[in-house]
Image (cartoon, rainbow, N blue to C red; front, side, top):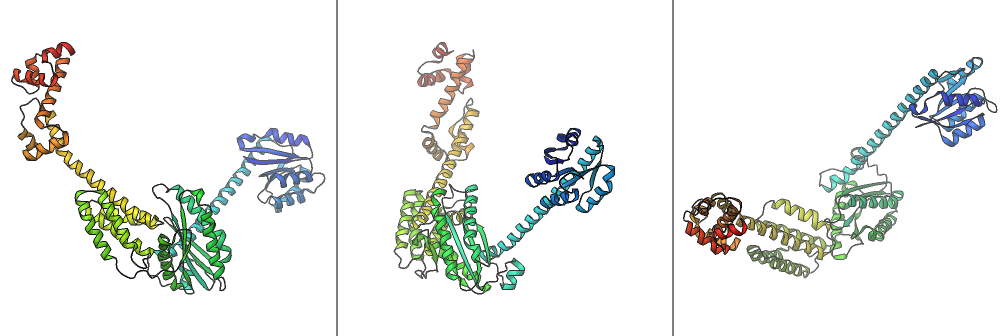
Length: 530
């Protein structure tokens, strides 16, 4: 609703204006009236109305001065002047204060409504234009933010970009005037099976707010980029601020750590890639930060990690070859426990390597998972391998979790293959049962069924007995007798006719089989249940 104030030294005029207009239809409401200029001005300052309807001459305040003061306190205020013919020229002077509407006394309803409608259209048009301008500004800010963010994105993706200060400014709008740059990564570790979607967005917002509040004031320029459960950052700052920046980064991590109980089972870590003075060194700095953050697997979470350890400096092929041999039999017999033993032995082998570092542990588990997925021979191997490394391994904050994910992968894949093989074994049985249900009234044989499902008699007989717990002949007889029981209860067909309908041309044979299974002959069964 648009807010309206009416000011006139004659109360009857105020009441008249209130009565004449259909305020509800206009989408307006009168929020106050005043009888002199000072009272009206005070009301305008307190309520910030959209429209002011005022007499041009009121006691206590010059009309034009009153309008000027009112417009100063409420810039977008629309003003309607009420004037008699004697003051018409005086009212016209108000145009220089942005007043383009006036009503001559006596006030007529049609003229009042028409004036208010025009004012409403102007106000709504102005609001739309302001909203559009604000939306365009926000859109431009978002585009600028994305352009800036693409710098870190390009660096992370390994794009070949020849960086310089001019390139940073012209291409990425990163106008770093400070002498030094610092990259960092904050890692959010959690169980992705439990925390994703909106929960991740909340964590990102908290991380961004903490980092911006802690770092923006001491930097010339700051850039953040979110990817998955990681926050990548680039800072530019003046010489002499190295220690202060490092302390601020540590403080930001401590703040997130202090609140982690609120967020649930979440761990935070941070790694810095090293201070550099040239833009072309940013790629190496960011790569170092990405490598350093993996050291939380051994060093622990909640730490500010700095520098990339040398590591053992040798290939882990011997340990991986032993793992490959151990899983061969486990995969062959689909034994999840044996595969778990192989995983635990791999962990023991790798941990014993002198000077092993976090990134090497990560690489070993990633290779082992890919190896297991490839060896077990399932569909979508590449998709599973990629998900294992990018989605699960990256979210581990301890070596125990890392090898736990490898064991989980092994168990899951073995279960998938077991289920697939069980379905393959059950398929011919389903086809055979379907064939029996369609042809049990005919003199079908085992050979006919085997031909229908495409298996040899000996293999199918053994498979059928294993899957159903009974031989094929016994199953066929049971199906026929079950149907005979239905016919005995629900029809008046003779015993001989029913026998023929369920596949027995010999009445004696039918009766004999019926008694063996049911414990009654067909006639007795009909008397009891028919």
